[in-house]
Image (tube, rainbow, N blue to C red):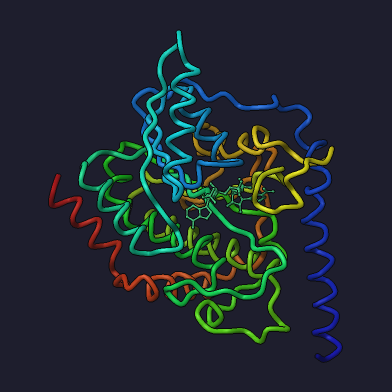
Length: 342
Ligand SMILES: NC(=O)c1ccc[n+]([C@@H]2O[C@H](COP(=O)([O-])OP(=O)(O)OC[C@H]3O[C@@H](n4cnc5c(N)ncnc54)[C@H](OP(=O)(O)O)[C@@H]3O)[C@@H](O)[C@H]2O)c1
């Protein structure tokens, strides 16, 4: 490393540290907000939410169901999801019974994603909101690969949700307006994307699960930005794409987060910005080419400068399409298919 590179490295490190300030300041940043957000009447709105069996996903799904939405809990543990859905229905007693159903989806298997999308698509219904919430952070664990040969964080946090969004585009386009929400993380600021390591081993001593987690979140931001831009280019402005950092939330994501500290959010507070991005009309004013990134105080926030590098974003898009074995003009095919049917 030469002198200039060392200096840049120092600045990058300081900038990342500055962006992470919201981790400890999140309670201050949100003191003026209600503890949880109750969406308006959502009758007639369909929502698919992944990872609704615990943490942020569970609370988001519950609030959406209470507001009258048709909520599809897309979960790998269908038994746990069904139990939760039954409980909500029982708790509703005198009020309206929530319209919740459970469908199986395991993001560790791309064929499970395909089967889920095919089963949903068979209904030929409109989908209003897709919330890609499920995620993993294998803190302190060594590098692990899935049966598809992909590093685990990149598959669960980026590739599988990207596939889900792409395969559900026809349903999302059927709705007069729809949103794709990705539950992202401020940890993306501390990462770079090196696509070559998505399906090849990095030297063990160089692997860091925190960097792999952050990198998968950064990759999805870059992918979603391109997807949004491409939809706008094709004049499909009915789909809005948003990514959101929910705050540091006491959930099952990390064992150390299961015990809530005073500066952390509980899962209800964690669901607040996700619900805001999924349902508020306010976000429309902040979309740039169909895309926006929000943080835990329900306000647009700065993303890593890597997301401004359009060549790098396109590289992420291309590598993703390559892994998913989707043609580069997949989007045009989807659009043409929609036109042919209408
Ligand atoms: N907690 C935080 O501080 C924080 C901060 C920033 C971002 N986030 C993001 O918020 C999202 C939700 O996390 P959380 O904190 O609520 O954690 P959580 O309580 O661990 O919930 C994660 C959910 O994802 C599901 N999931 C994991 N692997 C899956 C797979 N292969 N297929 C299908 N579903 C799978 C889990 O299902 P099982 O129950 O079956 O495992 C669970 O329902 C994640 O994307 C996370 O990265 C969290």
